[in-house]
Amino acid sequence: MTEPKQPPEPEQTDPERADPQPAEPKQPPEPKKRRWGWLVAVGVALAVLVPLGYLWATSLVPGEYNPAEMGYADYGGGPAAPGHDHDMAGMAGMSGTSVADLTGPKTGIPNVNVTLTARKQTFQLASGETIDGYTVNGTSPGPTIRARVGDLIQVTFVNESVKDGATLHWHGIDVPNAEDGVAGVTQDAVPVGGKHVYRFKAEQAGTYWYHSHQVSSDEVKGGLFGPIVIAPAVPGEVVAAIHTYDGKRTINGRTGAWQADVPAGTAARVRVINTDNAILRVGLLGTSYKVVAVDGRDVHGPTATTAAYALPAGGRVDLEAVVPAGGMRLIAGIPTLSLAIGPAGTNPPTANLSAETVDLLTYGTPAPIGFDPGQANRDFQYRIGRRPGFLDGVPGLWWTINGHKFPDVPMFMVAEGDVVRMTISNTSGQAHPMHLHGHHAVVLSRNGARATGSPWWTDTLEVGNKETYEIAFVADNPGLWMDHCHNLPHASQGLMTHLMYEGITTPYRVGGDSGNKPE
Ligand code: C2O
Ligand code: CU
Image 1: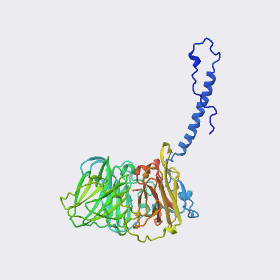
Image 2: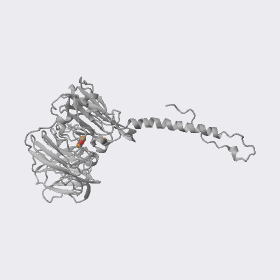
Image 3: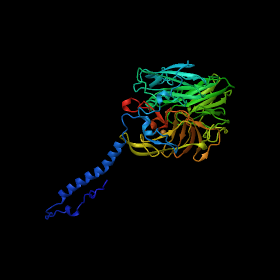
Image 4: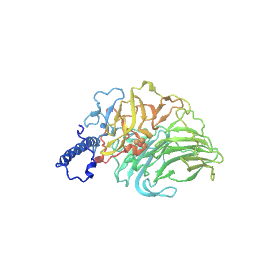
C-alpha cells in the first residue's frame, strides 16, 4: 500500500479574516484544494479499506469444508508418510481408512442397552425452577448411564425436537472414532426425527459424561448432557454433575442445598463432573478426603487433604472419604450450593472451601506410565494466543493457535503407535480447559517444573494464562480427533483443531451447507 502523499490539511483559521477588510484575495484557493482533499480522502479510505477487505475476505470460512483438510499439516518433526500427504488425505478415491469404518463392535448383544431421546422443551429442574432448554429422556441432566468394565454399551440416540440437530459425544471415554459423536467429523448431526446408534466397549472404569457435539456451545449449556459411570454402583457412591442453567448453578439439577443419605462410616466416593464452561473449586467439608481419580483415571497413592480441588470445565474428579457421624458436605464453588452426604437428617455446617488447592503436579506417588515420553517421535506445540482481526468476516479479538486463526490452524499429524509430546502454552489473557478427544495424556511438567506425584492422566487440562504444560500420549486410537477448548464458546470462536492419523479420511463435512456445526 502506498502512503497518501498529502495528508489532509487541518483547517486554518486566519486571524486576518476576522478583520473586515475591503481587499479580499481575488482567487481563494479553496476549489483546487477541495479537489485534492477529496482525492486524499479517497486514498486514505482505500489505504484502510483495501487491506481490511483483504483480511475480511481471507478470513471467510467456506460454507462447507472437509475437516480432514482443514488448516495445514504439522508433523511434529516426525515423518510425513509417503502417499498420505495432508492435502490428499480427505479426497475421495484415495486409499485410506474412513472415519465411518472405525466403529465399535458391530456384533454382540449389548450388556447395557439404552435409548436416549433429546428434546427442546421447557422443563423443571429437580429443585423446581422452570428452564427453557434441552432434555434427555425428559430431564436435565439426562439419566446416568452405568456400565462395568468389559461391557458392550449400545445407545440409541433419538432427536425428537432439537432443531439444529444433535449428537452424543462420550466425553473422556476413548471410544473408536466413529462412535465419538462429533458432527461433521465422525458423523452427521442427527436431524429432528432421526436416530443414531452408538456401540462401544467400556474399557476403563471411571467417571465420564455425555453431551451433544453439535452446536455444543448452545446445546450443552441448555442441558443436553448426562453422566456416564463405568463401575458398578456401590453403596455410598454419589454422582454430582454441576451445571449452570440460565445463571442458576446446580448439582444434579438442584439449586441450593440438599442431602444424600449415606450411613456414617461408609467409604463414600463422590464423582464430581463439571459440565459448565469455567473452572470450579470443589471439595468436601467436615472431613479430610482423597482425590482418588481424575478424568476417569485412578490417582496413585492419594493422600488425605482438606484443600479444595480446582475442577476444569469438562473435567471430572472422584473424591473419597469415610462419612463422619455428623455427615460431610460437597461444596460446588460457593457455600450455598452444596450437597450434604450423611445419615438421614444430617446437616453438617457449610463454609467456604479452603483457600489451598490440591496440586496434581505433586499429589500422590509415582507409578509406571507404560511408555517412555523420552522416545517421542512427534513433538507438537499448541500455542494459544489472541489477536484482533476477522474470523469468517466478523471483526473481533480471536484466538490463535501457533499464531494462526481458525480455520488456518495446525492439524497435528500422527501415525498409529507414535509416542507424542505436546507443549501447550497460553498467552491469550484467559484460561483454557484443553480437551483432546480419543486419548488420555499424561502431564510431564508445568512451567518447567516436572511432575513428581502420581501419573497425572487427563483428558481435560486447565491451561491458565501464561502457563505452559508439557504432556505426552501414545497415538493408539486411529481417527480424526478434536483437540479444543472446553469453554465451549471459545471453541466456537476458533479455539479448535484436530489430531489426525495419517491415511484417515472422512466422508463428513462441517459448515453451513452440511448442517454440521460441532462447536
Ligand atoms: Cu466434551 Cu469436544 O467435547
Ligand atoms: Cu478457552
